[in-house]
Length: 408
Image 1 (cartoon, rainbow, N blue to C red):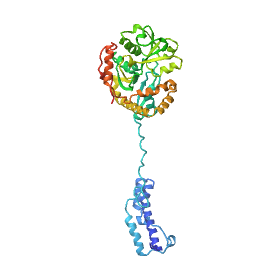
Image 2 (cartoon, helix red, strand yellow; image 1 turned 90 degrees about the vertical axis):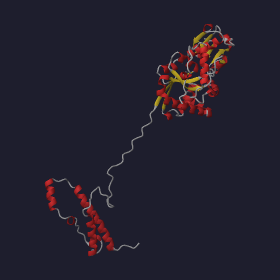
Image 3 (cartoon, one colour; image 1 turned 180 degrees about the horizontal axis):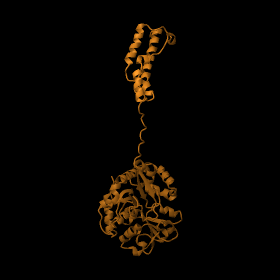
């Protein structure tokens, strides 16, 4: 590229200076203080022409070069003429003075967090291995990921969980299928929405030293139970299956004190849940027992642990219940694939669960977990309903659609 001559350099600098003066001339009225109308009019009449107002004395020494020729002066004059009368000021974008943005972009509004639905779930007993899906789903964030805040509560009375749901005092509760049929027959507005254990968890547990070999051997013995369903459904059903009734035994409500009642000799046998861990707990205390599963005593196979909701609120809570059941299904699949990690999660969340009896029962309980907690076996519910009706434990046959739903 050829090097510019001093004269060309001088012309370029002069043209840039002229542009700057033109911009300043347009900007100066905007920066001036406002004047009174009369003074402004007088000043407008006496203002010199623009070309005279912007004259600047320069010399060839000041700008480093020889004076311009007439042709060069004509070039400068032409540049000034083209800029004269054009709009100017801070709103005009020129290469010498780019326009600043008139507005700045504000930070974007923060994204509102998704709505969270709280579900209160009342357990049927103190936390144990049978609650694995609930505990793992809670720890692994499967509930919160679906917009749920699930609050697990342990009941003060094992008979109240389903009744709290029926009274709209809790959203969900755990119970067994037998209790569900009985409460619905009594007119309670509860309905099954999920299954945690698809095989029974109950049994008749008898002391070895009580000399009880069969249901007939229960006559005149003290039989303990922790829930009303233990007496009103399980005990009554197995007795009636052998032609007996509750008057042939002495039924005792031992509430949560099953181990103490057996250890101190208050009862000779116990009927109810915890049949998989209770024998080991009693054996550690030196009490030998024998378990008779309920399905061997004439009671049809049934769901050992179900989740119930209030029928009157089901439609309003359907989306939340569906998300809850979906989280349980994902948690159960993870438990099956990671049994040791699941056990570590449960015992860390509930240290009281970490016992030799629960550890021994864990494989059997895990085998009974429902891989499809939302699915409902209508044939199973129909058979149990017919059995309970034949044994006169429920007064009427309830349609299956009233007993349970698959939330989908």
